[in-house]
Image (cartoon, rainbow, N blue to C red; front, side, top):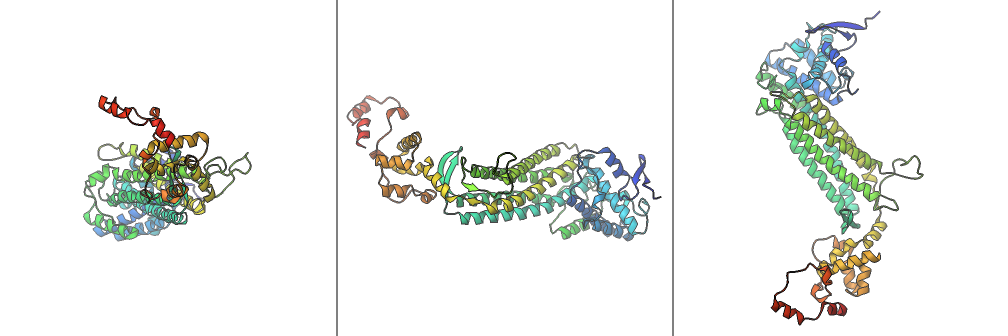
Length: 510
């Protein structure tokens, strides 16, 4: 009967390890200690862990500190994991021992046991390839984990950028398609100056571009790798040739221009570079959440809400109300963004919680940063494919809403003056009629002039409409009660005012 376990030993004593497992004693202890979330490390995080070990083995062979036989076997094992094999052997909860020692040893043990097999041995025969002496040579958890976080994050950000760029392209297509459709603007959720859908979509596209630029700037700080800093950033046991070859190899495999840091101590104790990426990602999440909420408002109704756009119907919206369709994609995007914001908060707390030469909260930083990038990447793909690419602008309803909006009155300011226009808006609102109707009833402007001044498209353009404005002084002024009272006039001014026609008379003539 095949044995179910093998016995391994570390400096705390004997440990039972599943016989077919590629991990060893330290991983088995950690599995028992950390039963927290039921989650596993991100697959790319595991692959990049193997990639860094691959680079380290090459570097140590270059430096002459690792013999070719063991080194090549470690490289072959690391290459297998990097290609996607043995991922099920990385069994630790992301919430684990400080600094990530458990994950580092999980990686060391899997690669050591696979390298032993490649050399013709059996799992656990660590005299052939030792997890600490050979796979972990010239490394510490304290320089290995930050390096893996940086490499993994950069690769994931590359995927995020592909979705951001595709979203920008979609928004620009929508901007061109609906360039001429004018909608009511809203500030404070109240009627405001009109705006074109083309301007809205183009503005959103620019927002995404700026968010991308911020993430790009932050990501550049991740190019400094502290591999070679060893335990506290002094570089003990790490030969210069090892560091040079390892960084060269990582650059070759990923396409990024990695470099040594100006200070190994800086990048060993400080997690600010990772935090900056999380903060830039949070800025994107804030903008995307706001846009998602706008889309939900624009789609609201369809009868009693804004109803300015119709979002694609992707699933029934209610278990009790027949025919109801909800903006579920935008709602899901909101939730994704909230979680990304929360990840940034957790990373902030973790980044400031280090002590002296090390930050022991790196496992949390690794998990939350990679998780935030992943869900934002997948969320943007969903938003683009299942919402933006199928959105419909309700042109006729937008026309009706625009005509009924008091926001168009802004264009009247240069012609009728702010105070008089305010009176018109107040009357139109009170009577439930349009601003245009009030002006026509009072014969304040000719039909031709009114059409020119209130032309919806023109209102969305800079400047004042061409043509001679009507001087506010030639029209009626608001009643004294609606004006801000000025200081009491001097006698000479009072006398002059007594000789002027009353404001009541001017109102009647107007």
